[in-house]
Length: 196
Image (tube, rainbow, N blue to C red; front, side, top):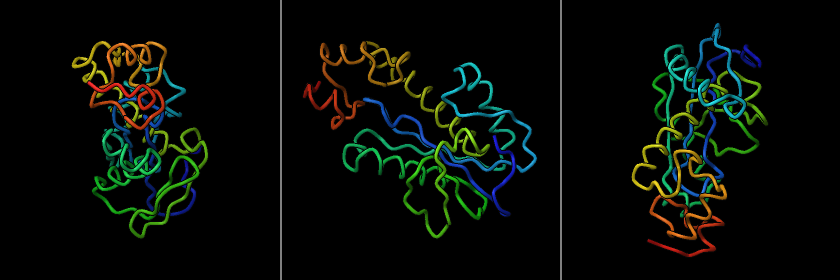
């Protein structure tokens, strides 16, 4: 994990969670960390749920600034998941209340944000502290949201699968149809064409 900035100036890290889900929003985090950040971070996918939840308040406390952005299932269906991921990151960046000089984005593509230079970093959530922090915030925020949505639609077991296309989730769609929380253009929901 690289703890130093690539170049001088204030950098904000961005990452998203929930791109491959059949249900729920896509959520993005944006984080500016101090250069002397002492946290031990990594890609959120490599951390246990317990570890992510422990790190979340620590990141929020140590960050110079952070923001969360989300794009709803309806919006995803209208603009596709790739554009929705970029939009979620833009919305997270909109909530950063300090100026920054450049954006570090996990992945290999990004839509420019205003006139701020950006750098796409493949596997950036395992290489750069600010992206790892954004990854953890996005993942924990989304998981928490899906657990709340589970209470409204318990038959899909979102408390466990968080909207991802598990065997149980697919079987539940076949049995009960889809909800307004499902992404209707996604394979698995679109193929069944079951609306409730």
